[in-house]
Length: 90
Image 1 (spheres, rainbow, N blue to C red):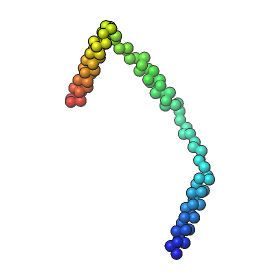
Image 2: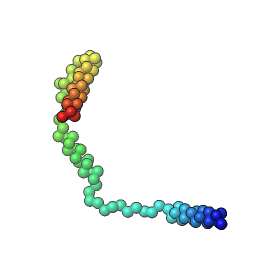
Image 3: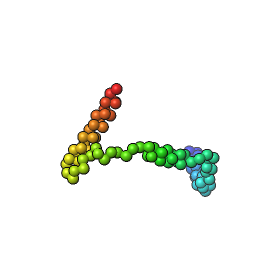
């Protein structure tokens, strides 16, 4: 009796799986929306980029010495890190 119920369960499961795969993918309806949210974000990013001032070139030395330039960049990075650490502890 156990074999019969196991066999019938296997057949029923196989038939269900066959019907599921035979049916194929169901078409998905696109939700009705207004304007595309991506367009709104693109416009917002463009507006922000237009408002941001370009970084001043005077902060970095114009020397051709790469070591001096590297030191200046590292100093700016450390200053920014110190500023961020100061904001966290408050």
